[in-house]
Image (cartoon, helix red, strand yellow):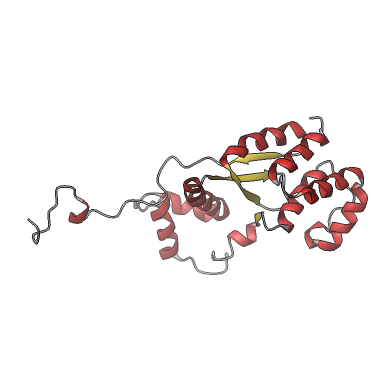
Length: 208
């Protein structure tokens, strides 16, 4: 894949058209990769492992710029699993059952509990994305993932009108991908358990 720096600059403008300073930061990482890398190695502890600039450094510079402007949500595997029991701690069946209720629409599934035990971060990531996507869709926004990243997953929020254009610019740049996370096909929360009040034919005796 060939790299197209100008497409990355265009993507940066598309993301924050009213903030030219972000464009300058990304451009600086393209023109002076070693200087940029040394600066951010001092600023970010998770960059200490980088010995030399990588091909995707300008893409990471874009993520850094969005992060500095509080426009990025970054989650590591540790962050997601922080409230889950470790192998030395007992399991919490009540908590697991509650999460299964949300995802399985009110039906307890032992199979899902087993899958969650193997891959808790994946299960919680999918649940978070599903809930967030429904909420943002009502406001005219979409949830997007920036790949590659130095975290388990790195997300940002974009307006629907510009998301497709930004996705294409990211692809054409060759530095990374901007994935628009799909809107869930099913409701996030299951309907309430059967109750007479939820029956269209139910009539309260006080008004019948």
